Image (cartoon, rainbow, N blue to C red; front, side, top):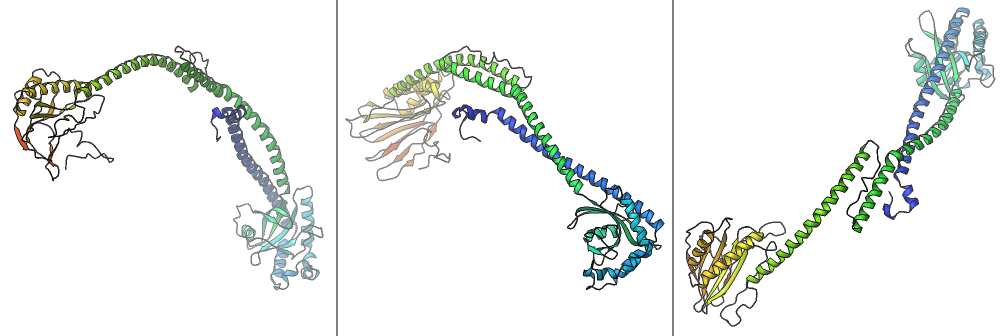
Length: 526
């Protein structure tokens, strides 16, 4: 894979890593693999056919020679006599095979008329034949050897006289001595002296049905190897030419049907993006594409054309929506400033009153929210404090909050008790509450001179109280029903004696419902 992106590549690098190049390489590799597989199959079939031909010809020659030999020569006694002499040899005499002393022990065999007849017959069958050698021999299972009885080869280097023997693999011995008569008797192996050879044979049996010898035919496979080499060379040349031609034609076809349409779509996309950055709205880059491949690429070009048209409409609508959202955002920012301006936000709030200190803050979940607080002096000796939470969020909650705050403040400034303030506020809100919203309220009035706090709770959170030198504890006051929930509700008051150093903490549900890093709520426990 290239380390650079396509946009960072030079023209030569893009050509090297192009889709057309990848198609060509893939086709080339695929053709080579297919050709190699075909070559292996072809070589296997060729080799099998050639060897099968040699096996059939060798077996046929062995059968013909065996049939003629049995009719014209008495080879059974000769074979039995040869093997009798061979098996009588000692372990020290066996390695002397081929020496004059060794062959002297089998001289009587070569003087038999049957031997001379067999040699003459084998010479006749060898004339005009592609067979390497035709001879009479017997396998000895005990010594895993092939014992020659009659071999017409007169080459001194390869001549084998009666009794001469050579070691063979036990596989070959078992093949010939223990095979069914219905099977083809042949073995293919590598012989150090002759190379790759195919040996086929027909058994000669005595009157008891025992095998006493084999008429064996040797065929060298050098011709098969040479044929394989010629076949491989010719096939390789043909495969190379066909592979290159196939890769060229397939690549040309793929460039026309795949690469060129993809490049056309990519160019259209680049032009589209460039025009959009320049502010051009109405474009027809994809509509003008002339792609008629009848497949997914043509469908892609049509989809892109539809997308271009839809995006133009979408951008136009988005521009309008964005402008509207900016207007709404501006108005919400103004609403936030108005809401913040309606809440006490200057501290210290009462710098000329050293008897008490008060602080409050609000952080809405959205631009504007429904939580609110308020505190103000009803008169020189009474401080009214309000903590409230309107149902819902956003602009509706903010509007309801403002109305609730004003009604609560107006009732408090009339000098009413906390319970009466909540009752009259509930009556005012229930009288015109089509949206069926409600607000929870904790309201307390502190008599500054005595420290007596009179409060009422309309479904709000418990206040937390700490006396001087102590810890904060939840003051579980009796809750009344929420403001705006039902007409005619009554609320109960309670009193708390505040002493020098006492602290009161009131809050909305945003505090106990805040979550930690594990998304667990902090709760209201103190």
